[in-house]
Amino acid sequence: MINDQFLLKTLCILLFLLFGCSSSPRYGTGSSPKKTRSKVRNTSTGSKKNGDSKVKHRKVMKGVSSFYAEDFHGKLTANGEVYDMYGVTAAHKTLPLNTVCRVTNLSNNLSLILRINDRGPYVKGRILDCSYGAAKKLDFLNEGTTEVKVEVIEWGDGKYMQHRSTPK
Image (tube, rainbow, N blue to C red):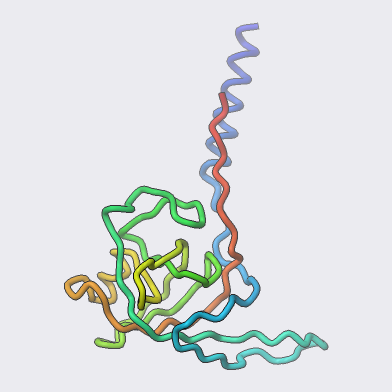
């Protein structure tokens, strides 16, 4: 009896560790988002293959970006993952969650590829809220905001990451 309980608890712990350490899906192709009020340009980047009439569009936006850091560090983002202020992620109001973008700081021409994992910014006139790590790489920490160009590389799936509760 005691041996069976021990084996059952050990099996539960091993399964929890196995599934807890497995990687989650990140980048998927989703549907096209609604238009935003920022400057938008759609260009055709796909072609018809095997009778497929879907044409993928690339979206380019220009506007002001800010960054967010300590106040949200360790809290859940809109897609359900824990916010890491040192990571290279961003918040956008309408792009599907998990969308991958190239963000270019137009004042110094530095750019990086990041993933949209949160919603915001909630300040009028801004189109993007970068993580502290992204703002550092784009070199606008001292200014607080900067003019950026956002180019969608891969549309996200818009899915929320579900968190499993621990077994009792």
